[in-house]
Image 1 (cartoon, rainbow, N blue to C red):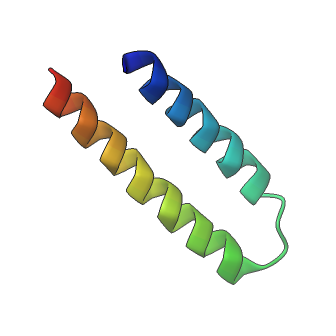
Image 2: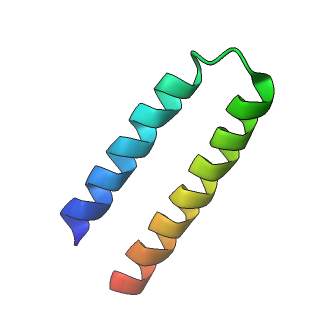
Image 3: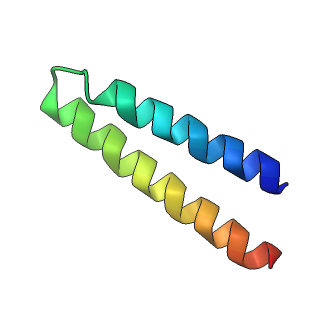
Amino acid sequence: MKTTLANAEAALDEVQRDTRKLHSRELRAAIEKYIEEQREQIKALRRMMN
């Protein structure tokens, strides 16, 4: 499971890099917010696993 969470974090990093290339500020902001929410969920899962 830890490997899967690490892969999820890596995927979020990749999406975040790609998001910076978008022209639409609204879309960029929405995606950034979603990414941050997902990071919080990953942190919560890690706490539950330990």
